[in-house]
Structures are given as C-alpha cells and as structure tokens.
Length: 544
Ligand code: KIV
Ligand code: ZN
Image 1 (cartoon, rainbow, N blue to C red):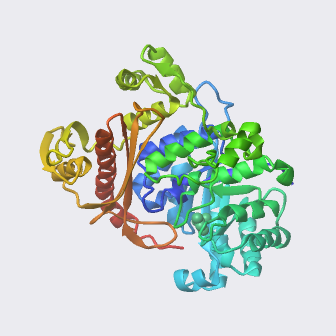
Image 2: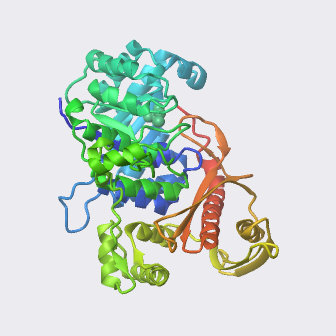
C-alpha cells in the first residue's frame, strides 16, 4: 500500500455551503489558486447543481486552476472535482463544470444509513443499490475519474456498505469516500469501519482509493480521520480552518501537521507545503468572515504563544521544551519585513508574485497606489499588510456599493455622528448623515439609509493585523438577511436565511468597519439577485 495520503480539500464545497461562509466567485478562484500552491491533490470546487453561478465558479476554477500555466505544460495541477447528487441532472451539471480541467472528477453520493434511506430518501435498500450502480455507471460514461460517497456511512450497516461499495466499484468508481456525515463515530469505531470496508468490499483492489470525510460534531473529526488513515484510507477530505456544516469538517492543517509531526508513528507523506498554512488560513478567514478561534490547533493566534512563566522559562532554555512543531513550519512569525516607503513598483510586483498574486499592469497600478498610501502612514509593510491590502482592493464582490467618503465625529463632547458617501451600482453618489451610540453605529446607520436592505448584524470583530500603533486595523462582520436570500445545501434540503461575512482593512478602524459592512451587504445584494434564479431553476431538482 502506498505511503502517500492524498489531500482532498472541500473548503469551496462543504466549507462554503455552511451558513456564513459564502464567498464570491472571485474569492473562490483566489482560494483555489492558493490551494493549488499549497499542494492539495484534489480541490472540490463546488456543487454545480446549486445554481448557475455555482456552476460557473466551478467551471472557471477548472479552466484556470485545473490546467498548467502557459509555457509550463508539465506543471503539476490538482484534480478538480464537482459534487453531484445521484441523479443525471446533477451529474450532467458537475461534468459541464469540471470537464475543462486537465484532471476532472465527478463526485456523486447517496445516503446509505437506515435513518436517511427511510426518512430522507424514502427508498428501499435494494433501490439504493440499484441507483448507485446506475448513477456511477452514468458518471463513468462521462468522466474517467469517479468518486462515490455513501452519505452517513458512519451510521450505516457495515454489511450493507460492503454491497453498495462493491456495486460502485463494479460501475467504475475509483475512489470510495466514507463520510461520517453527522460526526457520530469514535476513532475505534471509525478505524474498524474503514478496516472492514477494505477487507470485505467485493472487488476491492490496489487501484481503489479509500477516502475518509469526517464532521466534527463531537470534536473527533481529526482523530477519526487519522484512525481511518491508520486503517488504510489514503485520501483525507478536509477544509481550511475546519470550516463546514454545523461544527465543521476535519481541518486540513491538523491532519497534515499530525502526519508530519508524528511521522515515526504514521510513516506517511502528503504533498502539502506546510509553511503556507498560516497564510491560507488567514485568507479563508478574511473571505468568509469566520474568525479562527485563538486556541485553534496549528493556525490559532495563540497556537505558538507562551504566556505562563514556567513555559517561557523552558522555552528560553530550549525551544523543544514546550513546542512540538516549529512555528516557521506552518508559516507563523515570518514577519518578512519587506517593503517601505522607498520601495518601487518592481519590488512590489516581485513580492506579490512570491506570495502568489500575479497582477496585470492595471491591477499593479492600483495596488501600488494603495501601497504608497499605506507606506506614508506605516513605516514597514509586511506580507500580512500586503495580503490585507490585496484582499481589500481586488477580492471584493462585483461592486454594488463602494465607500466614497466618510467623516465621523465621536468622543464625550457630543453625539457620535457619521456622514457617509457611497457610490451606488448605477455610479450615482449617495450621501447621508446619521447619529448612533458610537462612531461605528452611526456609520452603519448612514450606510443602511442608503443601501436599504434589511439585515441583522450578528458579529463584529476588530483587531490589529500587525504589532505597533500604526498597524492596519482589520474588521470582520457577519450579517444575516432578514428577507429574500435563503440557501439550501446539497444534503439537508433545508432552506435558511443566509449569513454573509465581510472584511475590511484600513489604518483608520472606522473606515475598516465601514468597508467590512459594505462588503457583506454587497454579497447579500448579489445573492438576492441570484436567489430568484436558484428558486426557479434548481431547487426543484429532486434529491437522491
Ligand atoms: O458529509 C457528507 O456526507 C458529505 C458527502 C456529500 C460526501 O459531505
Ligand atoms: Zn460533509
């Protein structure tokens, strides 16, 4: 058996479909480019049947990330997968979306647990077996690389799974993914499940990759994934920061660093460039507006901080006393003091290229103007500053509303007042003034008067990107629509009011706050426009 574990990243599918993780197409494309650079083997780029917009986002990722760059045809590119329920319409859409990739994959699934078959699918086990056989055969007629998942495998009868998976192999599936959809199993149980599948599935052979896909409802996703790998699984389905349905998916960084740090225990390799972990974690957090908890393993801001005196003393004597990984192995504390006031365009272009952002001349002009403006206010500009600047300048949703001017008065001498100027979608400038309980409240009230989209502010977070009094302030918000834009994921059939994240960065924290709110509102407005299409075209497609 190979000692290589394929990393299948589903941040853009299972991660993105969870409430609040909505990303724009431009953001998804940027995350996909970064996943490719990180070295993931497979990118599940989305669920193309969800909407024409989702299909288009997957198609773009397949074309742009799933193919080698011009002039370097030998460059390694990831497999691009699209998810499809086990029906022809979904499979056709998945194929339409991924076929432009050099290595396309259709990933289809059908539930196999007694609970799901009876209550959700309302299908007999025999019909499930037949549907799997027919739909995997159909997918295989379109695409050489087919993955099949028996949804809720963690609560399925192992003997029934062997039969279903045997049919999937017969029909042409080459990857069998075993999901613990509701995060129910324990590591021992999951080990035995994977072990049993490898030993008892008819037709199992070396060419079949067994994969694991765990959810974190009991906080066991990483432990279960590692148990599955120990039992012989050679693909792990994971997300950056562990984002995903409910308590989330297994986090990529935890599995990869466990395999690397405890190499003598596992004896297994991945293709992940671990020094990029910290940066991509930040990128996904910015785009989704979902903050990483400070004590999150590997990528939390406290993951390498030592506060207790006894720990600091030990660390000073020898780093390994309290650190099992070197921070630089996951890209932490690499301050990269790179640029300053006197750096030119070429230096900026080179630094951005090294960070993975290739800008054309017009984009570089814009970035350079922002960089100079920042350099006037801040002495040294680090990679983290540049990352925030790029996210702020280029990865905003198609401009619906744009901040055009802001003036605030606050303090103890009067009422906090904000005068807000926004450029609307029609290019018209709108100006409103509002008072509030504080400068941010006044600013948001002024924005609301112009944008006039009912929503609730669920979360507001502010922090400094780097150290120092001149640091860039970064704000993330999460808002929930009060009407209109509902969403539905591939598995649950439940619709709920969507949650949108927004991100803004500026040396002025009120400006950063305004940008973050407008960013989230723009996503909400775009989704409301597209939501109508989704209802008519796609929500009618039957599950299963
Ligand atoms: O959790 C799950 O069952 C899934 C499948 C679609 C693989 O995400
Ligand atoms: Zn899942």
